[in-house]
Figure 1 (cartoon, rainbow over the protein chains, first blue to last red):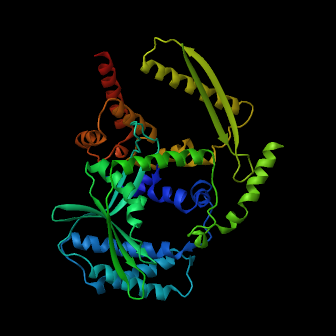
Figure 2 (tube, helix red, strand yellow):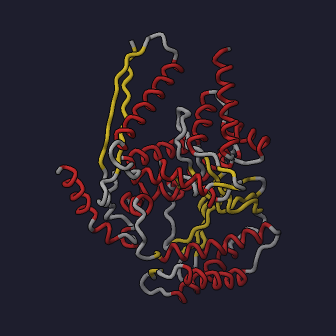
Figure 3 (tube, each protein chain N blue to C red):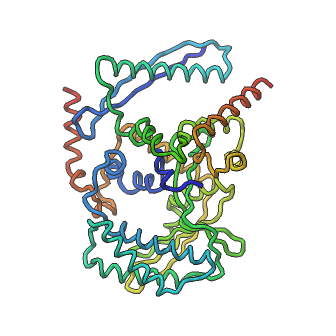
Length: 279
Length: 156
């Protein structure tokens, strides 16, 4: 099996790219992935999520080796990983009331919460499993650009297999979120093409409350969801070819966008280009 | 009489302008015989599209330096494809390109071969889990076999 890094070296689609294009902001997508503008800062959730993820990987590895780690071990590891992350991402923009130290404490509590909620009967089969698969439509025609991704964890309980994605969240998830999310569609599509089966998908979410809260959201997908995903990718490709990018100014993510300046002057740049071409 | 309309357009940025593009477009209309098989029609479409693509590129390159690839192609197109050929190597062997894999999956679909069966086959033969782990040479070999298989199927 190739690694995500290898798969990223080829032109590709990913869940996060599709999600950014359609659900976050197509203009932000273009700044990030087409025009490749440098980010003016690293959003805190990105850095924090990376550190959390690294600790969860270690927990999965430890479980694969037949041991459930102690919560304190995970907390101490988070402290170390976070300290490195802060140095690595030296331009993190902290949200109001947060700094590196308070984030460290929050992360310690959150990974301990994740360990506390491990089902010891559940077996970890794999973690960080990368995939790269063709996006094939209902007529059997594939896009040239494949779909790539990396499955956080594959677990099994009573011979029932499930893909797991580790998430941190600022708020409790709405009950309908998992059913509507495109990530299970993308990851189960990739997994099914490699392994020939469609397991269930579960989000293991730790909510950043003062006392962290652990939530699990299980969802299923079918071939119909996969075909829908492929059509979305096809649509995105045609919109990108036509450079149809628009700001999503009332979106939830606008406040933490690292391309605010470019966004503010986007319409001027666009008008000038049209004028010059007309002349 | 079958009418074949083929068009090709290419977008490139306006030099020195951010977020810009200019379009070049060519189209051709042909009349084809009613006696052609679907495969022959497909081949004509392919040949005509290739001719248009070459012609537009030749026009663009004539007299001026070759223009840079459009921004979107840097993500999906040839320019990234070139980067890919440099980066996507393991043990000195170039990885199969997205275009090669697309040919394989389209042929598989035409020949009613399931992708999971194809993956199982390459796992056994080449020891890799997915089409995208194949080298360019391995992908070419599979393409040759599938093309031959398709020809045999059509002849039968």
